[in-house]
Every structure is written in structure tokens, then in C-alpha cells.
Length: 74
Image (tube, rainbow, N blue to C red; front, side, top):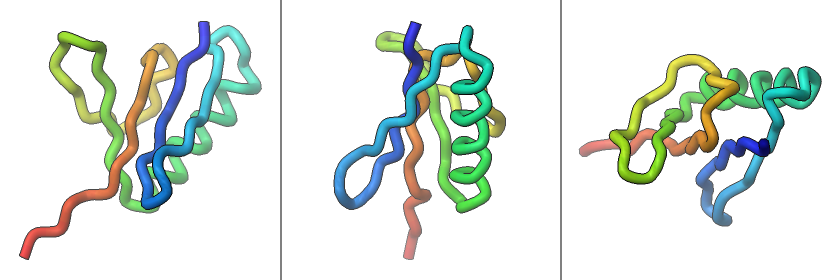
């Protein structure tokens, strides 16, 4: 089963996909997750009809993870 991270940016979203049964693909996705969190992006997961949950660590079983930049107030 294919799982996806979507990185929301100025040019739309950039997908990163992995299959939890594929250790190499999962490791690549986890490394991308860690890099985006270190860059200050926020990660969220949630299924349609479910409450959205913010993630601090990679969840290989999440079907979809969305990354967004924090909104600056002023």
C-alpha cells in the first residue's frame, strides 16, 4: 500500500511516497520527514472524517502526511 507525504509550497505540493513493507523506501521517507521538521515545517496526519493530528516524529503507517510552513502572526 502506497503512503504519501505532501510538502505544501509556493509551487503546489511535492509528494514523497513510500510503502511500509519496503524498508529502503520507508527510511528515505523518514529522512525526508526529519529534514523537513528540522527546517521548521509542521507535519499533520488525518483520515477523512477524523480529527487532524500534528506529528513530531515519522509515522510510517500514516496514509498521508501533510507538511506546511507555520503561519507568522503580526
